[in-house]
Length: 470
Ligand code: FAD
Ligand code: NAD
Image 1 (tube, rainbow, N blue to C red):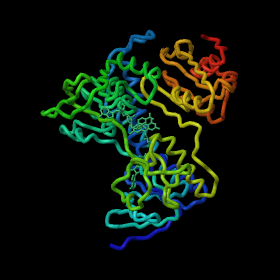
Image 2 (spheres, helix red, strand yellow; image 1 turned 45 degrees about the vertical axis):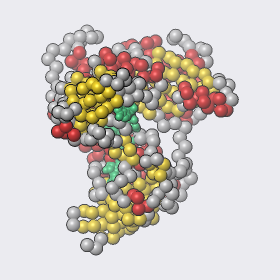
Image 3 (cartoon, rainbow, N blue to C red; image 1 turned 120 degrees about the horizontal axis):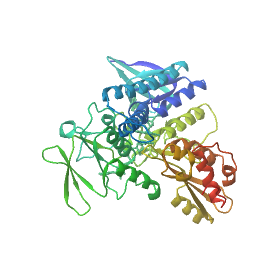
Image 4 (cartoon, protein in one colour; image 1 turned 90 degrees about the horizontal axis):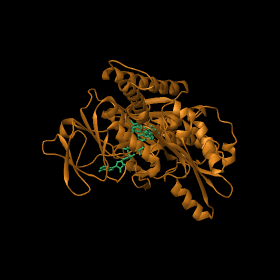
């Protein structure tokens, strides 16, 4: 069948946060843009990632608070979870946002082509739409195909009569699992494990490393570990997953002493990471340089082939939506002739556990290493939420804000926080790092009272030896 030909200046493969932002910005800059999306606009983030997970986290919090009752003088009788309705509410939020993306793309004149793009060469892709084959030629090809969940070969998705699932299914269980086993105590395992525990499931988390959230420092993770224990989530650390038992109704794990343990489960969520989506759409035809499993890019998101760009999860760590968006915006501007580089002072990361964790810039370890390399000492100060009025009034005294700064000139190097709603502090952290703020800049900014932000100011005051409320 002869393909139907069309031409565009910029062709974007993938309509996730990276791809759709790139397309909108390019169209704003007068670039004729076509975006091909095989599944749903909004990508992983809006459809099966950030948004539905955060919606469920909120719903589970509301339910758990109501079900717990009996505190702050509030007595509750007869709380019941209507799971289908909760899922419908979550789906409504997703639909609102994905519909918004479609509207924005249309408003800016981006041509959206539904279907799976198959790479032909660095200037053309083909998209099959029923009987028709489209061939789209472009001046610039932007690869924004995102990532996929990692599958464990000995615990494939769908095994055990559909018992073994990925995060996609765990965002849409139509029945409350009685016993949920989660493999992986990272972002997804803990965010979704907490959701289903709060909805009432018995939850066991199995982690290969000796602690949960191994990517974060131990102090930061302590309040999360304590909250999981309080909630009744069982965490099995340094355990090795072997696979399903013979009956297919339990997960077999090996404990640190080498003994086998069976964990009966009606659902097993495998959340052991995601990997760039590099297979199945002809990417190999471009023979691009790779960096591990990701497409290798430079500081402008250029690949090893001229006018072929890659952004977001496809271009490797960190696999975060806001990083994909920032790269997409930059590539659009570069194609329009602007001078840009992707050199952010920080890409804040938030783990929406209970309590939340946020990190931005250097960690204590990387700041020390930087100090050793460049010959400066590092100041470190924390301010506990137990001394913050707003945190107490939110019934959330756990956690702290920590600031790291150079001892010689007080330049802020990094931030970490753990506590209720600290995700919102990521804006202040990111801004201070991007602006090159000193401890004094934050310490002498008036922060509204009573807010969690006062802990940010107080951490800086404390680093200067001037703490007022501790
Ligand atoms: P994606 O969002 O994966 O989009 C890629 C798109 O490309 C997809 O829609 C796919 O269908 C399409 N595509 C792929 N190949 C083709 C092809 N050949 N033809 C046409 N279309 C194609 N990040 C955060 O920052 N905060 C969070 O709270 C957060 N929570 C998450 C929760 C979960 C459960 C998961 C799974 C992820 C979460 N993430 C979060 C990560 C975030 O979703 C990703 O980092 C982000 O979506 C990456 O954006 P992207 O545009 O690179 O790729
Ligand atoms: P992750 O890398 O955060 O966590 C995976 C965990 O699984 C790690 O703790 C690892 O030690 C453990 N693990 C690996 N193999 C194992 C095995 N065989 N047995 C037991 N444990 C094992 O990965 P994830 O939770 O799947 O999330 C994927 C990515 O999605 C994250 O890296 C993150 O970038 C993104 N994400 C972000 C957010 C957010 O920003 N709030 C939320 C969800 C997902």
